[in-house]
Image (cartoon, rainbow, N blue to C red; front, side, top):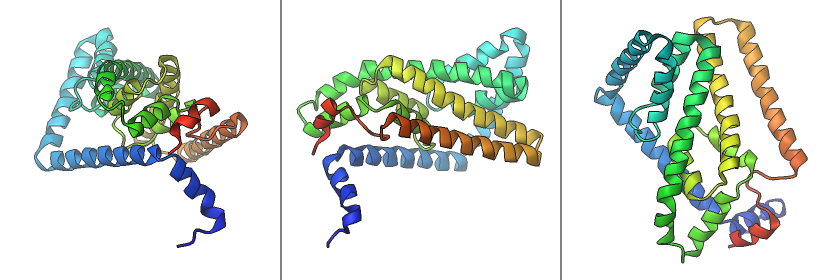
Length: 250
């Protein structure tokens, strides 16, 4: 089958960057697993247990008084080692008890702590595992490609909802994404996500059409700023430096 000339560059790019297929396949598998767990959990009463846990966490937070925010931060951080404990429970508790602004600060600090812990776990456990397949050129390509993702790619990956938060952090640690780049891109990506969650929570409680319009404008504005930054930097989402791009050729 003859490929139209206007699409040949796409086919050539895919051919020379085959690691992208492996990344997408991994994301599909992770998303399918997450969906399966969520579906099964809703049918065997786990969701009801989560509601009970949420109520208990809020009651304990209130009982601790000024130390309540610290409990929520630690609960968010616990997600980095206890995947069955969803971050949504302390997140909604923070917004419910402390409002959108104070809740946003609590959730952001807790999310950053959780991200850092899971990143360090991945950096500790990942290299010994990857070393077993270091002779495989595909694994080497994938390692170099993910390790050199530009900041825009790292931020955008935060907004792909079906990728588990801590799995993504561990992957960045395992594939040697620089710590400094990881921290600041995570701070930006997590803050944007938390702002949206705070806005949605506030809108659900105090719904008004002006807030919905404002939210739409902010989302469109953020999208335009990301596009503008990417165009100005001259980087594609998956771009690598010329010196390192040669490692990703098929």
